[in-house]
Image (cartoon, rainbow, N blue to C red; front, side, top):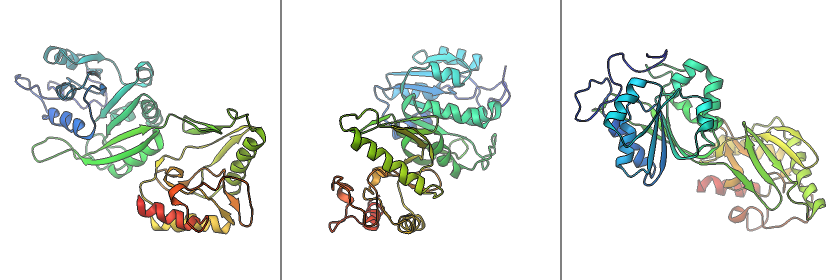
Length: 353
């Protein structure tokens, strides 16, 4: 029985089965399976295909060298058809929900196409976003597509141009690429953009701190470094001092809470891929109007949260005229040869990326 919000037309198989006299209302699913292999290496990978229907895409990924593909769908009839024609695919008859994702083992690749919008319709935005966040902790690569307000099928209150922001703000992936719509004149597919998300943030362990992310909150804990407690404590205190000083500026994380050895701040998205000139000027204005030199501006310390470029890691910042005993090996290749100069470093990053 079809559920509310299902894309399947009753009496028609959702995907085509090559060589079988089975009606369908959307063909060339094998083409989309090939496209997955073009944007990500599936060879020897373990893959989860969410909303697989009869599994045409799943089978194509196996054909292209995947080690295993688990296809998940609630439709028992579709699963039965898939098991008949695609015996090498591991099918799972199940709703796609948070409990399912929690139970799933880690996968190399998760393919989640043409299903997210139905989850929003059935469970609401908050539930769908939390599922998306959880998936980003369960795989190394996510291939994602959804309908939007500019799509005639199950429209959401976002446009295709907003999907990138959805992924930035609700996953932990540090590299997200919009590959454009996967459609051509021969396909009966809506022109939805497909996003390839890679490099999920896990744990960052430096000599001084441990950085973790959970539920959209970053925790930076300095308890791991007690060999030089006075120095470590000072580094932690300086970072929170600058975060407090700059609260309200859109280019700085929000400080949420703190204790003696750690603090929590807002998660600000993926590594920046461009710096618009207006945001370049805003960041310099923020620093200059507060008489602050960051001293460690480099690509790793610049994030994009979907709205703004955000500058992080304020441990080594100084006020104008202040001197410290901290290492002068800050900024890496982006440091000005004549000394610390945030405008020079920021411009060099802007040109490089």
